[in-house]
Image (tube, rainbow, N blue to C red; front, side, top):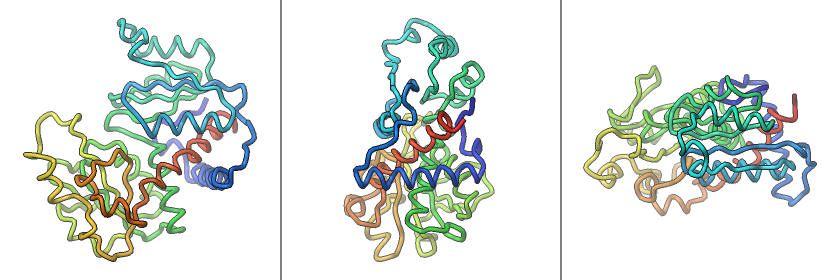
Length: 296
């Protein structure tokens, strides 16, 4: 059974197929058309050990639009709270013959471990600071819908990069499709990398085509990095004043810390694609489910 643990689990041809399917699904959603229930009689389990609004709900909507049955396991009431190991939980769920298990976990590598102990397709909905492949796919889709060809375009990823699974997945995927990725962050938030980096937004603002702001993930910090988030925002918040009248689009994986990551004015600007990203999450995840469960 095919899994999606990282963006590089799919080659470029497979990703182009997902983007084509997502475009078709997106048009049908916008036009209010009905979908062929290609996943009818398929069972999908969502297993979220971290909180989620956008990812979990869009996966569940995506599955239901294609006719699948969705079972959500409330981990706070599962046997893991009684001491059952994660592998045993997965093996017990797999014994019920689901077709896919969508998992989010605070520890990196958990989806990979589960994929070695189940027959079902494992889809990584985010593991620690490691990877979030469907977020990167919907970001790629959003960028392609706006720009078309991405070769030669530049994107700045700004913020808590070292703790960001979204950044990891986007660096791999967007670079593969021709974008130059520039990392902008304070020194303690930058990973070791061969990519171009800077600590100053003003250094790159006149050359980038897109900015992806990231949430400061204080829950993953072992110690306080800034005196306050307000201090951080004074250097790295994406503001209307910074962007001015430049032809730049703004992305964010959510949840957005208003006036910390992006200011209120820019969030209301037509160049801000945050809600479009959320909308695109459903057709992209429909296309991923089709690829993993139907096209086999």
